[in-house]
Image (cartoon, rainbow, N blue to C red):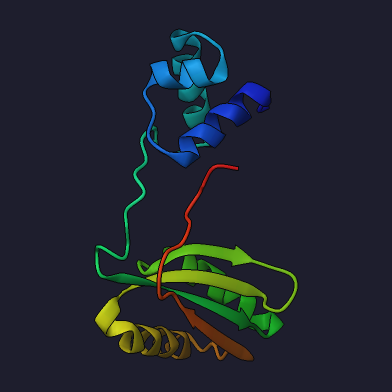
Length: 148
């Protein structure tokens, strides 16, 4: 079970890179408590890494491509595992609302068209034809905050 302190730790860790000492100050507990809690969160599978860096994708020449897809029910079971393993897919959500699936892929700024085309081709090879395939391409990153 995860308690309020664990949630605080995960929230801060998701927002940037902190030492155990810095996390201890932010959470109002001792460094050894933070160390034990982080180890336990890893063991439970709540977190996968202790350190995180948030790159500036614009400076790296990358654009995020956000894709929303409506799927036929029999295809959803096949497409989610495929997308979970896909190297370009960085974020993947099963959703209710306008789309069944929303995903973010990173593409070289000069290769966005090919990137989208390749994903459509791979879906077709899988035998999947989304009922709807909407694309939005980032032109700039205005905010990226992973902490709740």
